[in-house]
Every structure is written in C-alpha cells, then in structure tokens.
Amino acid sequence: MVKNEPLYLIPLTLRQANEFAEEHRKEHRPIAYDKFSIGCVLESELIGAAIVGYPREHRLNNGLTLAVRFIYTTGGRRAYGMLYGAAARAASALGYCRIVAFLPENRSDSGLRAAGWKPLELTELEKRRKPGLLCYEQRLMVRHRCPGVVSI
Image (tube, rainbow, N blue to C red; front, top):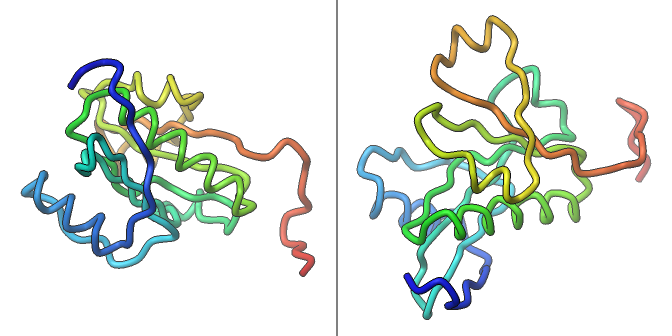
C-alpha cells in the first residue's frame, strides 16, 4: 500500500462485514447483531471492516456505551485508526456517551491511540475472565446526563 493513496469510509451491512471477516480471518464466528458496521476502501477494494454493537460485559452495557465487537484490516495501521475514529464519531452522532474496544496484549494499539482512545482499567474479575486483553475507551460527550432519565 502506497502511503499517500486515499482511504475512504463506506457503510456496510452486517452481512457484508461478516463476509469480509470470514474471508480474512478463518477463526471468525459471524456476529449475529450490530448497531452499525463501517468499511474502509482503497482503490474500490474493501480493505477493512468494523462491527460496532453493545458490549457483552455487564458492567459496560448501560445503554449509553457501544463496543467495537470486531475490527480487521488488510491495509495496515492507518486503516485501523481510520475505522476506530469513524466508529467513535458515528457513536457520538447517535448520542452514545462512550465506546470501548478490547485488544489482545500482543497486538499494537497505535491505531487506537492515533484515533484518541485511552486505556481503561479492568476490574480483577474481568482480568481473570479475559486474560491477555487490554481495554480502551473513548468518552464521546462532554455534557453530563442523568443516568436512567431519557427524554423523548
């Protein structure tokens, strides 16, 4: 991949994102539901996909938090940062307060850090349940909300 070639973001259906994942990661099990999916394109070829939904962790699933459930690119760190940043902006536009992502310790976190994400400390129980995982978050809204109060 040439450094200055433009990358573009496109919306994906869950089916398209799962097909991309199955094609590039053989151990991937299809994700059954999502909030939204995003793709990264280089020269009209899909080189990355992110699936964003609600977190599976009970402590994080408060209705105001989303999680990057799957992300993979064949286009390097630049595409990872672009997908993480787009996921955070889309979650913010939808009114969510926070987005989180889990990352294996042996993978580089440069894409997350480039997109403005910060490390999040896991509780001792979560560390035992998920050994070898790091958690990152990005706070999306500055103003405070009252928990449990939703005005429509």
